[in-house]
Image (cartoon, rainbow, N blue to C red):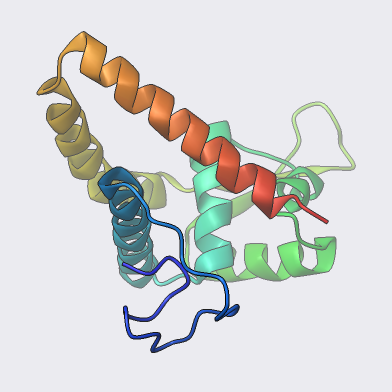
Length: 165
């Protein structure tokens, strides 16, 4: 597997031909496969819920964090307040969320996931999470600790490189 993309003959091209691709462990190759499979699953969720990537990310934040003000959602998504308003409008039109008055700030609103949408999202996610937990349960405590350590450190590497300027 060529981490730069393409096959061993260079199809797809290594951006620096004079620099050979590093040899990678099978676990690193599988991490790429996992990323690809996760992307496919995310695309499947988007299709099932009739949303785009931004809308799905907003729904994920709402389902894990609960109701949130649009400005907070904007910060979590890393997009402008105008783009967030557009995403919220789409989600409202699809019945995924509602806008409700903030209980302690009369000038503010909260974006709240609908129960129907919450149930549908969990219906799609719970079987996957249960199967992943079952896979992990097949490993000893020591193996699980090693898997966890690898994934934590791999995630940190990706985050570090995503935040480079």
